[in-house]
Structure formats: structure tokens, C-alpha cells
Amino acid sequence: MCSNLSYVNICFYLRSLSLFLLIYHSSNTIAQDAQFPRMTDSIYMASGIINIAEYVDKNGWIKFKPGLCFSDSTFFKDHKQKFGLGPMDDIVLKSFIRDNLGYSHYRYYQRYKKVKVEFSEIILHSLDGKLKKSSGRLL
Image (cartoon, rainbow, N blue to C red; front, side, top):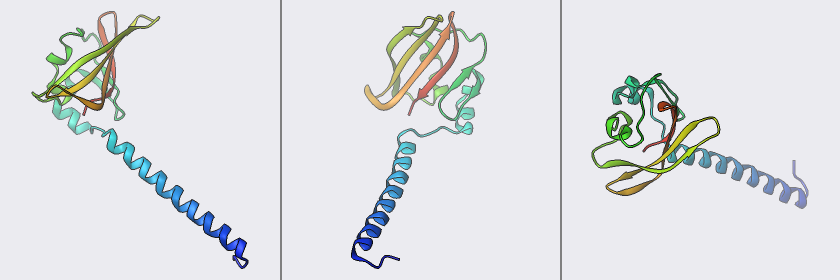
């Protein structure tokens, strides 16, 4: 094994480095999951989002049913409970972009009791006034 003093030092450092990398990688993965909790299918179904969604992805993507009319000023007021929002939550439009394909992208953030909720953001993607998809997280 490691019989010489220099080999002992090298073995010690390699073992320490391996242990550090293992612990660092594990804690980083756990921290990412804690920062962005995933809603399960049962939570989505219970909230009623399934009534307006064709597909719900575990990574935050929602594909809306065809023909769902979209108004950026009333969408979250009309569908607040479907996104799991309570009476103290509100959604605020942060920015709007129209791309070269004609899609409109509305970026929102969440507030709770008028205080911005960190790491919460949702983007609604629409085409010709019809809501297509959303991406992001509301906490």
C-alpha cells in the first residue's frame, strides 16, 4: 500500500479529496432540490390545473389545452387557485418580449403579502392571443 512517507501523504490527500468531492456533490444536489421543490401530479390534479392543461411536466412546464384564450392582465386572477396560490399571494408582470416567431413571453414573479418570493418565476408563452405553454416555478 503506502509504505513511504511521500506515498502516505499522497494517499491521504487523494482520500481527503475524494471524500470532499463526494460530500460536496451530494450536498449540492440536495440544495438544488430544496431550492426548487417539485409539485407532484396529485398536487396539480387537486389544484384544478388539469382542467386547463393538456400536459404537466415535473420540471415546471405546462402545456395548455388548445384554444385557451389568454389575457395577461386577468389570467392569474382567473386561475389563481389552479396554480396553488392563496389569498395572500399575487403575481406581478416583470417583463414582456415578443420574439421573431410571433410568440409573446410574459415573465411574472410571485409576491406573498406584497413581499417578493425569491426563486419564484413563471413565464407564459402565447401565440396569436392563445396561451400555449408556461415554464418556471411558483412556491
